[in-house]
Length: 489
Ligand SMILES: C[S@@+](CC[C@H](N)C(=O)[O-])C[C@H]1O[C@@H](n2cnc3c(N)ncnc32)[C@H](O)[C@@H]1O
Image (tube, rainbow, N blue to C red):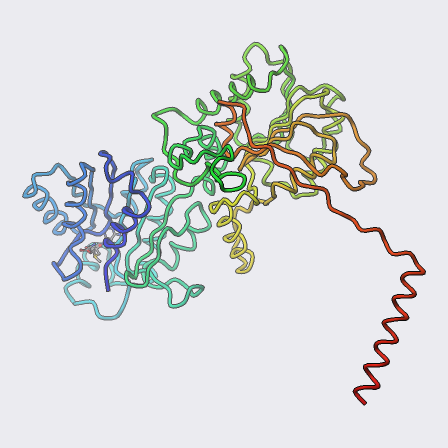
């Protein structure tokens, strides 16, 4: 059985190939090598891996003998790596945004065959012999700490963690850590039968959707997947430019990024000189601040709505509606309700800009996998941070039926302008079908203003048969049935 550091290297090669040629990646190992055993020796192997790539490496262990050995190893290798004597969970808890890659292989799980020497080390440093529950709790605490200490796209491997069947319980070191991680912003990156270890990655969307979406606005994923999504790619609507591999663009803060992008939105939408804004759900306020800054002197009024009741908003007063990361919390009914009622509040041709949606129908594997995971959570009663899904055609139909115009759908949002008011008591066929524009990356759309025209053709309805034709058809069926019965007798 291969050990977890093998899986870690495999995960880096498969999932973070762009890191391999970049210096400065920071790696932490919790649980240093103590006895040179075949297939183990993770400290040496990881240190060499880091040395070859000009990465930073720290190994941490509760036992000073192990860290002293590691320090000697680093000196022999001529590298400036750190060997820290500490409880790994405490060391992690004191760090913030410090690690890109973490190998958790600390407190031993209780397989009943640990040597007396090992047991004594636990007694000496932790006050009791190896205990399965303590092992699980230690790895849970380490994972919890990594929600702060892990950098964006942090990759973690927990060694000696496996399950007997795809839906079976986690065993070994991770029975508490893995389920907790899956509920708190992490997803499984790799799980192989030959490693008895699991690789997890921090999924920015699950951890902090509003921050993640701000990053999406940079269109950074377009750089990683540079598919031309104007339709020339031959993949229907074009491959969405958004995927989970976005790279941070320099040291800009999320707020700066959002503000810069909102400034582009304001330009692209050709908003009036004074802009009255309604924001639906303001996350932690970062979107509010960013839009206020982006509008600067042009800002008229700014209202933030947390509930679904927009009656208090003055009619025909709004120049822009923003929903940043809040729309995916609304049921389809509430989405409809907002769009229906907003029409009274918006000035003619004023835009609604919704960013942060899980839009199916774009062939985006990333969104589809979120959908599958949600399904899994529902089926297994796993509590979590749930988002709603919608689809390109659902969005288009809702907007078109409510008389919105200039509908542009992105893989994670949409824009539409209030058109002429239409009655919505009874919706007939849409005889011309539905038109919309699609551009997977909002950022690209902001730069170029171009998108692929999409068209959903009208449904053909054949005329309902007249009642005389119906009764003739029924008679003929009865006759045929009778003949059949006689033949079977
Ligand atoms: C399985 S061994 C690590 C093996 C090593 N990763 C390798 O493959 O060569 C587990 C190590 O975790 C250390 N350890 C146990 N509990 C710990 C804790 N709470 N914090 C830090 N180290 C811990 C032990 O001293 C031991 O050296």
